[in-house]
Length: 222
Image (cartoon, rainbow, N blue to C red; front, side):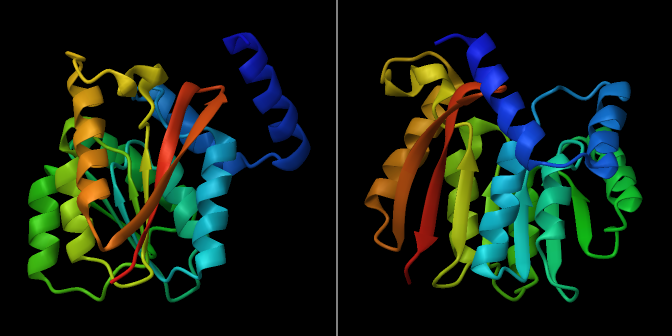
């Protein structure tokens, strides 16, 4: 199968099942105008994250990697009125765009974007001793995935769902000798998860408009 076919299939399902959404379309458009890389989750993937958070009844969501706030909007919309989302972004310009998109979505009171290296922001967040998060979405620099997971565990509770994006890397994840730091970051993450008794996890491969990739889904057991 080709990328053309994968994209056409995504387009078919998206056109049938995802109605037009000016807010989300506007978030993508502003991100493009502001020069942000086109690496946000696809619409059907955003809907999937939204549905998982809703099914789980998440009240508190942590996102590592904001970009322009596209996935942030999907996740924040899944929250109840008293819900809270904290998203971490290293690039101040990306954070500025994300905040503008969240404001346009009417979610600025529910979703907070913090700027800085995620490992530093996570350490600072842990110092605040917040109420545990119910759902964690990790979609930032892949070499730091294992570090993000360790902090996510500290900030979670039994039953917390953790989703990590971009773990298949066009199939390159199976190469133990890869010189790609992102591939090695995913492999370190998998090793940590495999050895972590507090987690039950699985990986799902995906094809679509974003190419060949996949997610890891995990549940915190204790």
